[in-house]
Length: 130
Image (cartoon, rainbow, N blue to C red; front, side, top):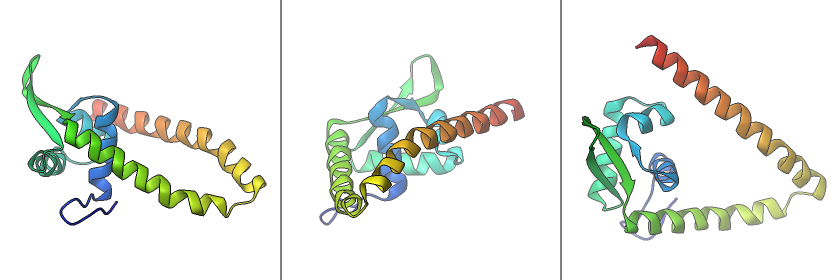
């Protein structure tokens, strides 16, 4: 996730940007999705705010919450970082045989499904523990 000097993106930052590229989220919802403490997510969000990639505003329906959303610069940075990742991945995938590529294509939806189920299960457990 490296770019020119001053534009480096860590994997945790990239993952947060990816979530926020899909939709604005509260700080607590993002912490749950990333399975980190609220304090850790707050620190990570503050770093992204300082870089001008994320806007942090009070939630109008619950002033105790913050809503995070990408700024235009944040969206552009995320799209560049994603594009660079895909450019690095393409030559690696080119080394796979057709059978291996087919296996990857078949496996990815199943992997996404079980990961989503696991994420939902973990979220449900955290909710019931509170």
